[in-house]
Length: 155
Image 1: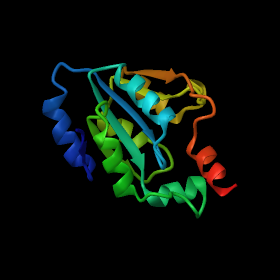
Image 2: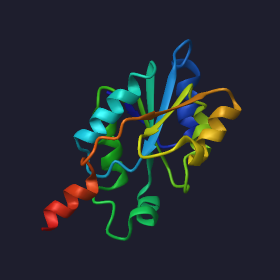
Image 3: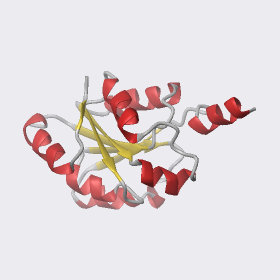
Image 4: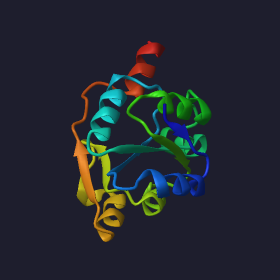
C-alpha cells in the first residue's frame, strides 16, 4: 500500500532514500471517482518505471478546473483510495494550476500523462526536459471518465 504524504518536503525526504537506483515515474490528476480508466492508466504509468508518485489536485484546485460541484469526494478520501492501489507508491497533493512545481520537486525520470494531451502544449514537459527526464503519453481509455459517470447518474 502506498503512502499519502501531505507535504512536498516529506515526499522529498522519502524519495531521497527510496529512489536509490530506481526509476521514478510521476503523474498527476483529479481522480475524483476512481474508475477502470484511471486504474488502467495508473498501472501503465507504473510500468514505465520502478516507483509511481501520483500528484493529486486539491479540492480547491478541482473546483477551479471542474466547477463548483466538484470534486464529489474530498481530497483526503481521494488520496487514500489512490494510495490503496498496488501500483501507487506515493500520493501527494498540489493546488497550482499545473504540476510544474511538483515536477521540479520530484524530478521524475519519466513524467506520464494521458493520450488526450500533447507534449508540445504540456507545460510540465519543458521542466522535465530541462533536467534530462522523459515524457510519455499513455493511450487514453475512450469513454471512461468521471464526468461520464456523473452524467449517467444524473439522468
